[in-house]
Image (cartoon, rainbow over all chains, first blue to last red):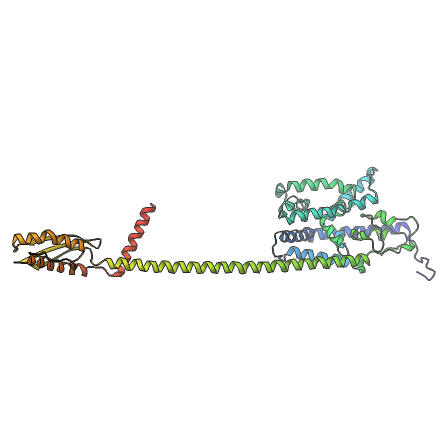
Length: 265
Length: 185
């Protein structure tokens, strides 16, 4: 910026920007697929660490370190440093959400049928749902019934399917049904599970995020009544300082590439 | 900044609570271990005590048993001089007790005196399980002495046939085991 404060950055012409956006989009998809093949159960391992520790506390036992907790610690440290980059770029279940929504969006475009969307307000309310899920699940684990959760979890069904263990799906019928019920949700709302229901996401969203890799916006330079970043954002985040909802951001990067003034870093 | 501070403080509090919990549980586990080791020790001492009492009781019982046994099982004969000639006596010991005292021959005796002694003495020897407290029959002294000296000889042999204390105790235990098995069956 020059001394007068007016922007000296040219607003990029649409076609170039669109290309950039698409490139970044595919880059993120590629990295998600890479992590899907190399670390497909990181999120479930981390959550197992939490479940087992809560169960141990409920039983008054000494806490023991496990490889689950190593996963948890690694991802949490990563999240504290870089924000919920894991959610946006490395979570296998997040990838599933994204793929279902991409397919639904493509289908909507092709058939010209637009599914109704939820208002930003509604979305912000529903986002609290994952904390209820977290609380409920940990409550059940505390009373010693962890296996009830794990046996019926859609994550278990998802892991079995992606590991091609279709024969074992018999033992996870409830999980399978829950998973199937989630799919329409994923088609209607981007990152449906992640923002409304994911207990691990609930944990990550409550962690402190160091300011170095936060997404920031120079609000003064925003055109009046733009709101493009909020509209394109899967979690409808208003990018500002000290937003209590800043834990929702999954670092997908869409806001950066839609801003007409390049305000977002 | 405020969000960051709140979250960091929360995180520190949660981690602190976890460490506090861990510490508390560890201390409690140690106390439980200490208590259990002491209970175990008391049980061990009790067992040792019971064992020693049982051993002492057993020793007393054994000594009593052995005291009662003077003779070994078998048939023993002895001869003694009566009024005229030898008197041959047979003593049968079974279950370490004198079961029968029989005069086999008393050829040289005067029948009258002899019958007086023979009617009484074998029975008395049986009852007394020996000859120490058995007196001669009044008026049939020589016959009595013959019978008693024959009994003495037989009993010397019977005493020689007594098994050693060790063997007696072994047999006693075997018998007790058989009885137990018999009882259980």
